[in-house]
Amino acid sequence: MILAVIPLKQVLYGKRRLSGVLSSAHRVQLISTMAEHVIRVLSEIPEIAGVSVLTGNETLALGNCEKIDDEGASLNDAVAYAGRYVESRGASSMLVVSADLPFLSHEDIRCMIEAGRDCGAVLATDSSGTGTNALLISPPSLFQPSFGEHSLAAHLATAEHMRVRACVLNRAGLARDIDEPTDLSHLIDRAGTGYGFLHQYMNRPTE
Image 1 (cartoon, rainbow, N blue to C red):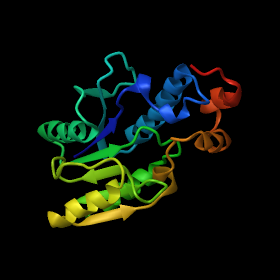
Image 2 (image 1 turned 135 degrees about the vertical axis):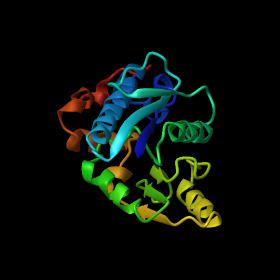
Image 3 (image 1 turned 45 degrees about the vertical axis):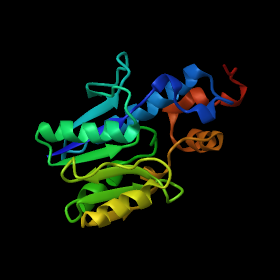
Image 4 (image 1 turned 30 degrees about the horizontal axis):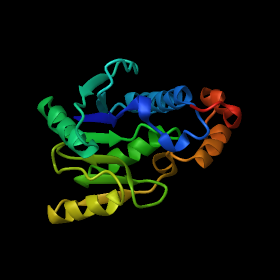
């Protein structure tokens, strides 16, 4: 059984690199809209038995997802805790997916699941080819994750040390996250009407 986890830490303070062009309210709206898309995609994959949001925000409302409490630990400690939690719920695999993937598709997730049939760890790279935007591990507590700078190499090194077969996927829908102001132009052009509030972002007052 695969259970998916979406880490969503500090929504009210996220996407600081966009603060020069988006107000805090519009950054929250952006984060929530992207997360809702990721949740929807994951929820529509039959092989995924459930989707949970890992967050410390008690007021966050994103569909009918279960919330896994993030009590302020580092991202990697929080994800490791989520792995132990979903394993206690009977999950044989945990799929961790970044919340800021507005171009994520069903096929992207199916490719990860298919790769996971032969690999204990499946890693989806970010657009730089050095980070990890999604991770499928079996079992969920297989190893301590290493999200952050150069996480792809760190995850691969951990898998090699543990003699776990690892696969790396490079797909646009998994790689294209939204971190910089230049990413917003691509999002406006490609992501559809759900992001209409960004069309005038250059003229929005900032806080």
